[in-house]
Amino acid sequence: MSNCLETNLLGVTLKNPVIAASGTFGFGAEYAPLMDVSRLGGISGKGLTLNGSQGNTGIRVWETPAGILNSIGLENPGVRHFVEEEYAVMRQTGCAVIANLGGHSENDYVEGAQLLNQVDLDILELNISCPNVKEGGMAFGMTPETAAHIVRLVKEVTRHPLLVKLSPNAFDLVAVAKACQEAGADGLSLVNTFLGMAVDVKRRKLVFDNGYAGLSGPAIRPIALRMVHQVCKAVTIPVVGLGGIATTEDALSFLMAGATAIQVGTATFGDPSAMLRIIDGLEQYCAEQNLANISEIRGIV
View (cartoon, rainbow, N blue to C red):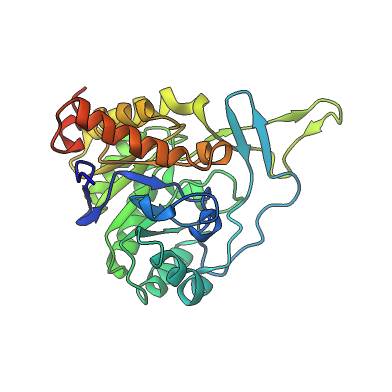
C-alpha cells in the first residue's frame, strides 16, 4: 500500500491524516465489529474527566436537518479507569492513541494530565471547548487569558505532546489560538460544536435539561472550514481540522485550508465506514494528482 497518506502530527507518525473525533467513537473497540479500525490514522477517545461522570440527564441527542445537537455532558469512566482499562484496548487498535481530557476546574485538568502520564499516549488532546457541561469545559476556552492559563498549567505537568481543542463559540478564536501557542501548545484542534438549542413544540419546553447543546454535522462545515483557515494563517503550530467532515472532498478542503490532519465524528453515526471511504478517496486523489504525499496540498488556499 502506498504511504502517500503518512502524516507527521506533533512528532507522531500517523498512517493517514484521518482521526476519529472524541465523543463519537468510544475508545475504538465499539466500532471493531463494524469496520477495520486499524486503518485509521488515530483515535481520539471519549472525553475524560478526572473522576468520571454520568453526564447530563434527559434527552441527549436531537437530530437536525443537517446534523445533530448533543447534550451528553462528558459521560465517561474517569481518567483512572481509562489508565487501567481503556488505554490497553485503544493501543491494541494499532492506531495513534489520543486521550481527550476535559475538566470542571484547574485542578481537574492538572491531576488528570498527571495521571495520564502513567501511560504512553501518542497525544494528549486538551478539551477546553465542551459546550454542554455546566461548569468548566467551554468556559476555559472562551478568552485568550483563560485558555493560555490552563494550557500553561497542563503543559508544565504532562509528558505528552499537547493538542488543544478550541471552541468556535469563543469571541475571538484566532486570539485564543495564538494565546494557546504562546502558552506552549504543540498543536490545535478545531472546531468543537457550536452552541445551539431545540424546542419541543408539542410539550412547549426546551428539549434539553441543560438548555443548550452542541451542534455538529454538515451544517457547521463551511463555518468550521473558515475558522480553520483563519487559525492556520495565524499560528505556526499544526492544526487538526474538524467540523462536519463527511466525504473525501470535505477532508481535502480542510487540508488545503492548512490542516495537518482531520477528525471525523458525526458522519460515523450515519455511516460507520465513512472514515474508510475518506481514506480510500484520499489515496485515489494522491494517485490521480501524482502526489508523493498528501502534505503537498496543505495550506494551498
